Picture 1: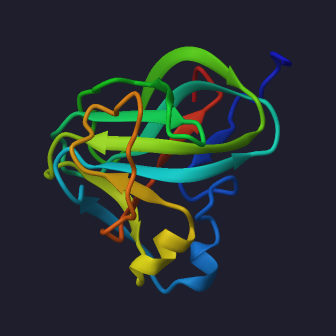
Picture 2: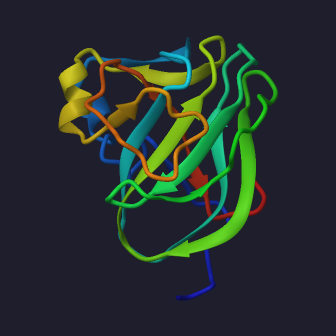
Length: 175
C-alpha cells in the first residue's frame, strides 16, 4: 500500500464514508448536542465504506460536558473481528474532540465497522438522535450489550436505541 496519506482526513460515524451519512437528508432527527451514553458497557457499531487503502493513526470522539466513564474506540472487519482499538481510555476535556492514538494500521478498501463502547451512562457525547429507530437498522448500525472494552469478536444485535455518537478515526498523527 501507498504510505502517503492526507494529514487531515477524519472518517466519522456520520460523514461521507459512513453508511449513515444520508440521515441528515431523510430523517427528522437532529444533531441535538450532547447526550448521555445509552447504557453502561454498551457498544455501538457504525458501518463505513472505504473506497481505497487507508491508515488508522488515531481514534476520536466528540465529548460533551459529562466527563466520566472510560471509552474504547476501534475498527472491525465485516465479520466483526476487531482489527485495532484504543483499549479503555479515560475521559478527556469537556466539549472538545478527544483523540486516542494507536499504532498506525493499514487496511485495504472495503466495508468496516467503527466501534465504540463506554463503561457507564454519565459520559456525554455529541450525537444524532434519529426520529426513527428503523433508520439505524436500515443503515446497517448494530449494538451489543456488555461489550466494554470492545471485544475481539463482536456479537452485534439490532440497535434498540436511537443514538449515533459523533466519533471516528483519522489518518493523521496530529490535528
